[in-house]
Image (cartoon, rainbow, N blue to C red; front, side):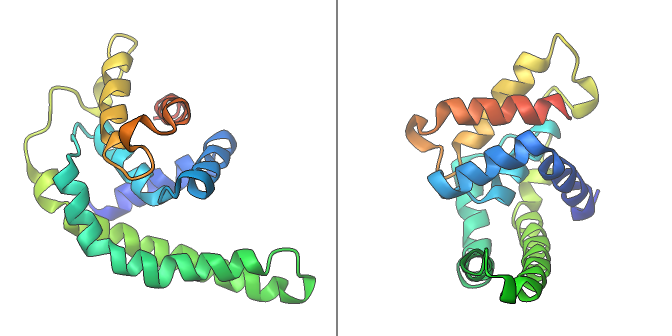
Length: 170
């Protein structure tokens, strides 16, 4: 398995309108890093449990890239929203932002190699059936709770809604 497996899954999830809208809301209100949330969800579908130390290690690897590349690109693109004279430049910034997010996925992938190579828990994506959806939702919720924005029960209803949307399409 390669990072492309996750990246393709993340793009499919983000392309779904109710999921995209909720992720963007959480990005603006909870400072959620969308790709981190999607990665946590994907890991759970692969039978991986994300721990706080895994997120800390991931953030050690990705933090500078997020803070110095991804967020500034997004900020400028958002600042230019609605300015017709900068529409071409905004489209170019969006392309750069997607490339930056793709590199972020690679950084997350590398930083979690030991987690991904460890033994899986007793459920894999292929086993998602009516009897195991509750288990999958619980694991995905646990993975999401390790992310900043969801700690201490913040945005619990939105997190549960996101988990339901992601499981629906997995």
